[in-house]
Length: 114
Length: 114
Image 1: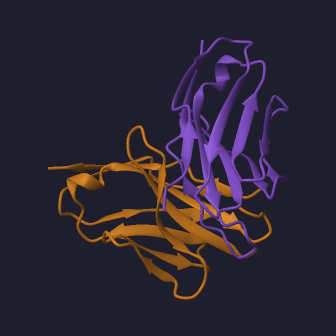
Image 2: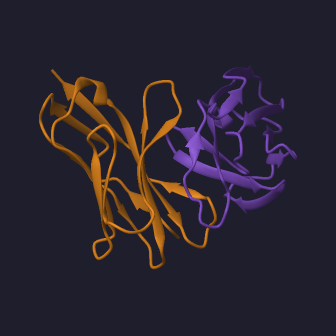
């Protein structure tokens, strides 16, 4: 069965420090990879995606993620976080043979401290 | 372009009752997926509808059902509610084609079963 693992359930970090949220997936087929962010009492917002092409993808608010096929990873990074980045982040995988079904990791709560 | 809308946003029901949740996708999107989010199980895929047909189904009992209308709006129904059905139910829409894997989520319906 396909699975997505987010290794850290919580990541505390000081404002303006760099952060990495880790994501690994199990797969032997083509995958599409996503990071979603969820603020309290809201739905999920698509942060960035890897569908094909360049393995490094970026979002408009400074996050980036790199698809590493050999390590089956898709870690999320930001060089300098802000208080407003405090939220829960979910890594998700869609497999080429599974339509639009997303398999999610357990989530990582990013807590940015002043 | 308006986003995904879900109604109602909050719902309180009693064990044994049934409930219907509604989702209106982004204009032009033909695929609607439903997910259940709970603190214990995280985000789990329920089912996906495309062109009024169920295209994928997750591992949930038959009490959970759905349908999609010709205008792509979707409803999900849960019969004989159990306490464990308390959750945030999220709807997501996408274009739905074979090369479309980006899903956009609504704000969710929070269901509380007492």
